Length: 221
Image (cartoon, rainbow, N blue to C red):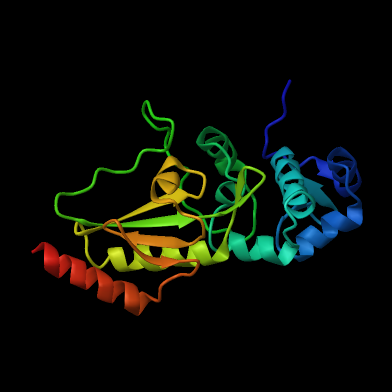
């Protein structure tokens, strides 16, 4: 019988053995705010869930496979959910999300499954809206890794778009997407407003992007 993912049953020695790491490494992950094991009542013993072990394996892969530091992972978790750092398929994210126990992780719901599309579908664009495309990620060995500048660019764009409901649409595409190939994007973040490249390799300041959007909105009147 399969145990529930959120049942805290593994002491640190058993957890370390199951993930192939030392108990000291698991303590470091906890000290860095990456994992939060349960504590046995009236005792200091750490107890890990099956979902904790899944996440610990992800941390180890990000560190040893993708050369991220624990501080870098923590910084990313402050901005985006873990399934976006790992680029997990939406169905995997939806299965993990209810059981995650990651301290202070930025949370937004996993994307719903796309309907008959190879890429996640974007919401329909309102008529007359100005479109802002954000191209993100670092391409290495055919895989897209997180990019802090790209996260910053998207946050700025979405924050400004909220001030113009229905008039500004923000769309996000990774560096390996067909859309990136269509525009010949080579560096990220790249910001395109209504098919005009306005920044590449760096995020626009909020003031500069808002000035551009006001110009485009004025031209569309």
